Amino acid sequence: MSDRTMRLTAWLGAQLGAPPLAMTAVAGDASARRYWRIELGHRTLIAMDAPPEREDGRRFARIAAAWRAVGLNLPQVLAADFEQGFLLISDLGTKTFLEVLDAERAERLYRDALGALILIQDRAPTTGLPAYDEALLRRELAIFDDWLLAGLLGLSLRDGELRALATIRDLLVDNALQQPQVAVHRDYHSRNLMVSTPSPGILDFQDAVLGPLTYDLVSLLRDCYIAWPAERVQAWLHDYLDLAQERRILDPGLIDRVPRWMDLMGVQRHLKAAGIFARLKLRDGRPGYLADIPRTLDYVLAVARAYPELAPLADLIDGRVVPAFRAARAGGEERTT
Image (cartoon, rainbow, N blue to C red):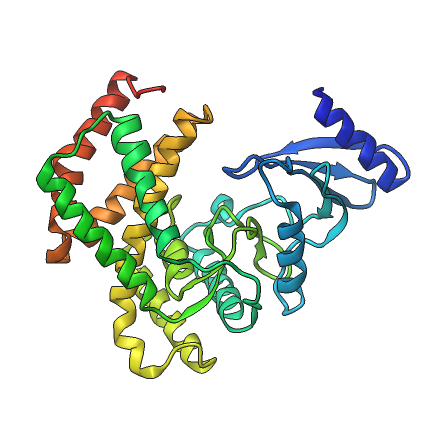
């Protein structure tokens, strides 16, 4: 047991009045946070270790309280020591959507997820949320270049590719900024939605921002961890648009713009995600996420092939990135520094 885990255990004992009956490590997210399920006999709680030099526990607690107040099912913070980075929170369940999703359950679970998304966009307070502004969008796009192209694959872009991608980045940034701005969870997908009552339980919300209407929508419908047929995604998009109009989140005059907004927003998100998955391997020693890179690149390719202005991106990914990635995986030769 590490020194930090020993300190967490001692802190939990002080909060609970006795040491936990059992502490079981819980699979976490891609952050520096770690989680344990605490057994108390008649119920379970979650202990969260969020090192304060890398994670903002106060922000987690603040957003959790604000979003719970409008009816969303987020963890309740029961005790916290922000200086040490320890939090004791309620347990939203043991199964993520990803673990139970199949063709039969998908309709009910996605209906729940879309309903909660509408509530986030309609009622979650935005005061104090940082803006998903141009600077942040461009920093995120650079993750693809730095960590996947250069870092993992060792690819150098040619002058023409660099110019074309600069133009495409401008297009993606403009697309995000021209959309209605709402509260954005920023990682709203099947691994962060829990099978819970009420449904869904929502995790990993602490990086919420004020940003584009379609960001969470495309995160959910074109999930980095599970893909659905285009016809089903289109049906869910129509369900969302009906709800958004009912709640007056979206002006009816903008409805026709949403599919393009979502497509281009998805390109930005999936380029970033592919870069993050490479970074998790190279920087954090977590190679399991490499298996999700092909799915994110497939999403980008599907959109890029449908929009002439994105053709250079499709050519780059199809002609250079995908072959280099396949060769690296086949040979086990991904760069490690």
